[in-house]
Length: 274
Image (cartoon, rainbow, N blue to C red):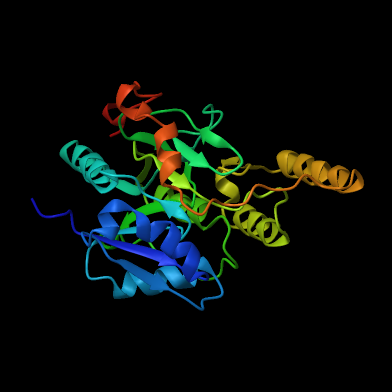
């Protein structure tokens, strides 16, 4: 059987990171899938919209350059899409790790540098409000696009998920474990807070918004707590040294031991979606 017709897209600013991680993914390394790279863009939205215009397939997978996709990852994504399509679900955005009210710790199993394994294991597509930007899957035919006015490279996943919701579509975390081999983030950069306030203004009708980094709320409770912790940490110098990404992410896959296949669905499965 030929591979499911995906277009894989990555915004790239470091070719060595791309080579050590995403391009090492088995189904990409063996030539089953090629990566459409986007470079030199000032924001993720502009880079990804360019890919939407250029990609030859309907289904696009946007993935970070420092993500490793284990063996059979694309087959799991294809199986999740078939399950949703067979149930006649009008889905908007899919991803490996999602957030929603009442799902502390997130939905979907991911390994992230500095955090290790995190997220609740799932065995079927589970509805979520937003998805982490490490993996985002859309269909061109849905009409979804990234907001060209959203600056930088933060919270564009939350934005396109809310756009999907606003269009009557449902977003899902799917059982597609991956490794985010990133440099550990000790402090959120100023660009994140710019994106936070952009999303808060644009989607105020959906507040509070449950995103993977923090909840975006009317009175900024979690934001203020995070900023206070960062300020206090600076006073207690030296700051904790962040863990760097590893040279080869492949051994990190063994940590998971296929938890997803042994887990039960969490919360409302696709049968609960009209």
